[in-house]
Figure (cartoon, rainbow over the protein chains, first blue to last red):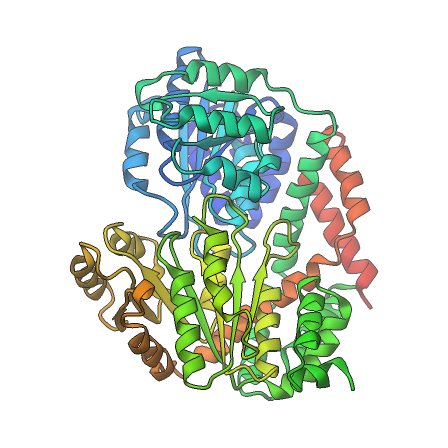
Length: 296
Length: 296
């Protein structure tokens, strides 16, 4: 059996091995994904993003439990922040997911972000497709919505939930930063805190068309309703094509990045550092060389 | 007189116009920067990064005042977060810089981040070079260190200051996320808060070789010492070349991004969305086409 067949057959070891190939951006991964592609398109892909401390991981863990209770197989891809400032208790968050560790119907993968050439987005899409092909019904992608790259990943999921907490002035900030484009659903978590109603009013005023759910995930409150809202959410018709434009661009940029020859770049950087060349002429020269070497 | 000559002559209007060309990634900008390059390399480029609420902008404003008092011309490039969650009072922060608004020896530029093709880094480097050519003695690049892209920008400055505040467990998190590679200097700001000594001990234990300064920027305390530490900091010999490798890669990636034809990509995305094509074959095909069209 090929690796693809074993992934489709639900072998956990094969899935883990495939995920590692994808994470490490091995050339075999592209062939594998091409083979798996006809078996994708069935999973519900859910992006979950929001500020540090919003309780995203608790929410993801609760959603996992409730989907499991409904007989669904659930995959979670957690994009771990590269920055030390973006997450509170990353380890603690992961521990909350541990209760699903023994459950074969749950697959969980954390992606480290630092120093990844071409960014995180391509590996995240590919992992989500892998889980889709492995017959998971739900694939959640959890990112801390703190940087441009991180928010962009969440927005490329099928449906994106922006999780906010009362008392942080998130509503006003969300409006200023154009987060409205990213949110398909708002979730006010820690809804028992003071300020929840104010936040709900603010969000409704800013984006009346975006459904708003309220949860206290630590007690499981409202999570069933959120789950149903996620399942009921229907995208506008042009949505999938727009998202694929973004995903294809990310995949293609990653591919183009591999054309830059490291050693030559380092040598050129030394020349620039010694001020023997200017960076703009160097870039021009590389651009031309890359064309010539790969062309025709 | 050319725009480059007027920039070098210190005309504020010319500088602002050039900055706009750079921000909008106009083709004229590359020629301008190439003309300016021989007149760069004199400014001290300082990256300032750290978590939201660390008081970075107050610190930057204080550093500006103290460098001005020493007769230095100061430029500040603030990379505004695209995410609503990364900054507290962005507007308030900017207001703090307003006291320098009437001062011709201070140039300030905020960069919006959303939806920028090829990321923020290239425009930030280019703006820093522009300010360098316009005879600013110090160019500070302030980013909220919350996402991969944002931290990477700060680390590509000449000297990078990581600003932390007591009581947030930043030391431990910094160690976990590999922030040690980014910091040339640590600055514990809000040093009057409880926990400052603990944080200092933690940081020293994790990275004994990184100098540690302490400030209470809101009262100007310790800012002079930080300024002197920044000026006194000397990079390791291979540093500039390594940084230029990163900068050249960013500039080159941006250039390669412009080769992706938007309309064709959107058409392909529609095919993928309809499941008439798989994304990996589409990317392969584009990769080949870009080679053929640009090659030989």
